[in-house]
Length: 109
Image (cartoon, rainbow, N blue to C red):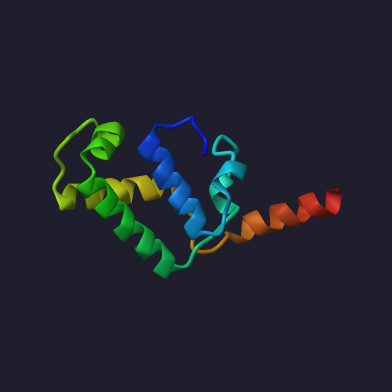
């Protein structure tokens, strides 16, 4: 497992990747558009959101690592997960411009 993040962040990102059939160790989150390389269904996205809300809500060390707090109400966790998913979540489908860019890259090689 990657070590560039804290333990709980790695667990969350690894779980997010597994749910999108992606290998966390192969993802370069410093690369532009990394979040377009994999997709997940709306149902999978909801499952991940529920999992992450419960993970953060039940594990005080995760709250401290991610948000510098040790008591978060479930509503606070839900808001935090919404913000996390805006920054790190997969798309439900790849945008057309991204698909076209990938096709141009493949033809050029």
